[in-house]
Image 1 (cartoon, one colour):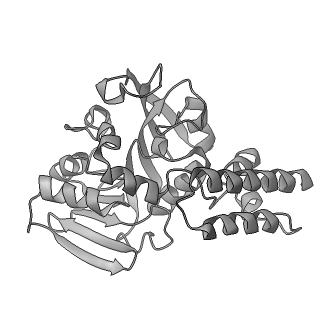
Image 2 (tube, one colour):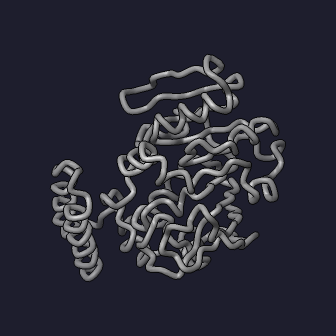
Length: 292
């Protein structure tokens, strides 16, 4: 077991140093926490990385919980302020995968749409009888979503805490929580109960690989035991840490859902004008269904 602690120690040291170089605009407190975490994982008592049984041990070591990685809420909010870096993520129409593979609203009433952005998908889902719960860190994105697709003065805004506000419309059948997806306060009690369906449209693939494991844990926390997941992810042949979008392979999906049924439903060429200025020679968009 000692080799595992040494490996975790090295992973955190690398992460802390890398963050201090790549993200100098962040407060130094983040990096002090990273360094402190490095030494904490060398204790004899097993850490959360080893205790957690939701993923294989080798996977847990490579996905340290709580590590300060790229693409934090602060990074995404800056992208929303700079529209040229976010527009390629936003579609004018409802996503093709969602229209093709959405389950019935009679069997899956409540749906979670993480990292909502300003997607019109949430409006489409509400119109088809779903109760939609969105989570988005950017107030700008959510305000634009409600202003453009619902209309000013046709929705309400509630401040739940200093770090969480709720935008609601359609008699609360659409509720978007403006907060960090990893926030402790984001729990089933806050969103009014568990969801039975998750529509992940490029959320997983937008997060740094080191955050994938804890992201899936958050989805499980918010979902019913037998929930269904519909994931739209990007794949490219570049390094796994090159992105966003970060490349998500079928093998990676299986690693993140080791005990669930994984089905690849679709695979299309995503190298369009929206991604023309990127360095990706190939870019595929794939759809996976996860049955838990």
